[in-house]
Length: 275
Image (cartoon, rainbow, N blue to C red; front, side, top):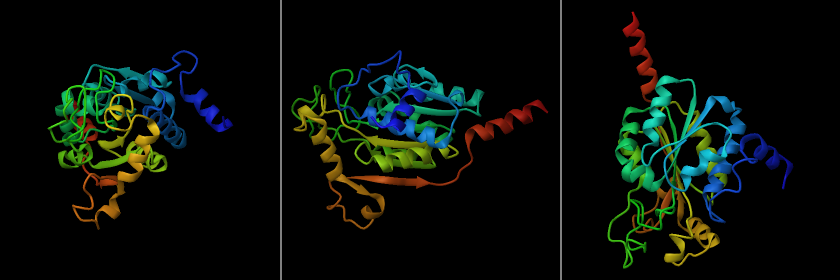
């Protein structure tokens, strides 16, 4: 193992207490965690100034492994806890990690309104298109026609597009990456942490155990190849027809604008109230 990787592991992970991890071999969550650690190290953020919050699901285990201030909350409520932390301690860098089911099913309303309010949180949503931890039930992002334990004859609902939903709800920074495109993933996560306001990075990830093996991609390599073949960069997608984009997903930055930040506006209200 390269020396610099070893240094990052010992610097940022609770390697002596919490490992081995619970993720399946080849799970994309490890790639997302690696990206986060590299970005935090590059930005030079102090560990005591970071809070990582998660809900329930496979990605919900991520805060367990990092040596930051961490909070493992209830299903769908990661953003509510994170909002409270940011309002009380606005100087902290608050990073929220959720899965597609956690963020857009039971947590869907919290997600929409956190984006609308523009609360200063960096939000990473790991989208593996399935409920991986609880047995392979379909989630709000399971594609039409795919197989799940609760859709044994094919899924008849249409999937949420998380990144586009975030743009519509008002998030000033929205990007999508994948666990195959790791350089891009590092770049957009870095921008999401630096951005003032509510930032969203949707990460297309693999769950070859619960999703892949039911949909003819039973190993991580097959799912990685699927991501490689179906991802289209945003600038290229703008020049493609709807037929050419069928069954594809865009990667890159979908929104990057400036808006008044809720936490900063809230501080102004507090100052007025004390006069």
